[in-house]
Length: 340
Image (cartoon, helix red, strand yellow):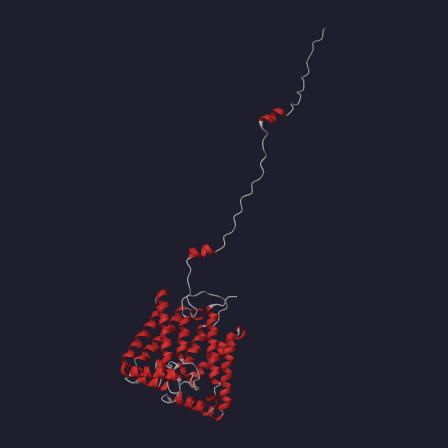
């Protein structure tokens, strides 16, 4: 049985959740370092946001092993649940609830309210993209068509609006001081290079050196590219494919600048936002369209049965008529005169 594109994307999302679970099982996560990491996300947020973050960080610090084991188990259950069809809807619903909670208590709303959010440091938050993908990849009871997979659950209008908000928001963040300041981009790349393998640290070091001299110009270029990606979703399908290809390339460049999400440092909780942006772009890839003439040619044509002809009676030929014996004619009675 052929696997549809939507199911393939669901399995890709399940793989990312399983990767999260593996990262959550790292030794670093079972110590106080994990709670300290969560506590830092409260800095700069309003009190109504920062208060619950600090409270949850203290609670996790008191029960670090049990809490981290529970978090890893939940992520593992979500990944396996999405991969298994009978529990797909339940797992996607659980992932939405869990993602929203982690976005607040674990990521501080992605730093959007602190003035430090940037496309390079994972804004608007990786877990927010998990929730968005769960909504867009929600299974349908029957195939309703659609021009791309992400339009299946919410419709093309809402799906395109979501795309515009995400990528347009990233373009806006790219021109704010957190990204466009002279040393902002170089500082972020330098920060993520700590603890990386030598080859990746060297790449990030060279990139940081370049951005240290051309930071504002690179930020403006990044903003333009992100804006083109955001608005390009409304173009015709051939142009949309080019825009989505640009989105995947941009996500790959961002992931390299993010140090591959820190997965090789032993202290990352997820692969960062860039891989999820690439997966989001694939979900918007236009479906192939077939011409009506080609569809008619591909449809099996019913076999035409020749009309049945009833056997016709052949009339006897003249020779046959002559050969048939004639019936003798009955003689008429003759009247004879009698003598008187």
